[in-house]
Length: 145
Length: 131
Image 1 (tube, rainbow over the protein chains, first blue to last red):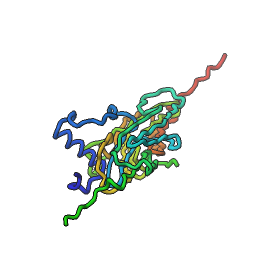
Image 2 (cartoon, rainbow over the protein chains, first blue to last red):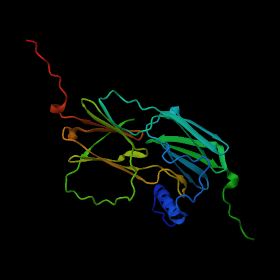
Image 3 (cartoon, rainbow over the protein chains, first blue to last red):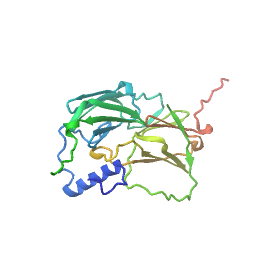
Image 4 (cartoon, each protein chain N blue to C red):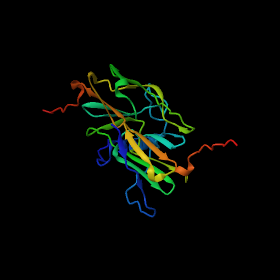
């Protein structure tokens, strides 16, 4: 699908994908996942897939990775945790936009993921979860005799 | 693992030749003030220290960062809340702020900026002498 633009990074591809969908069908035409939440939920999530794995990225700055609860049941991935922002004593507070409190995000992954092969890492405020897809569902080349 | 960040003061008239992306993410911030100065905290998930730029040009503070995350080859996007790779947000500063002494650090995608107030603008308590 993105083979025409190999020089673009994934995030640029997301943007292009969105623009193509919006242009072709209007914003409301694509069916939303039943577990989708209103735009602006914290943390923001991007999901990408390859033949081998599903990659989930949570844009969650300032988390304590030890306090994260990541679980997977069949193909449903849930991530919950807490980001508590302690506001210090100050004379004036001008902006308070950053999320503070408990969060939980649940998403449906493709049905062929292997719940025993999950990896998670946290770097620069992005939680990256990798779920391997099961061997049986990888695309196979079929030879014509 | 907190890293300190150098703040570059841009000379006015400098031409920006770098190609600019068309869409920017607006980082969410907290801003508060006490007697010593202003504190700004910004969420910039995915930005590493070398992809963060903080510019002060006269009275404008500009925060820019680029999302830098590792991705496998041939990854196809299937769902995305984040649809741009660059953060950008600017603020207007006031003259009592000492822009040469801005202190910046980045930890786990959270930028902390402290902008001190000039000494003569700090509130002072006036003692009343008793006659």
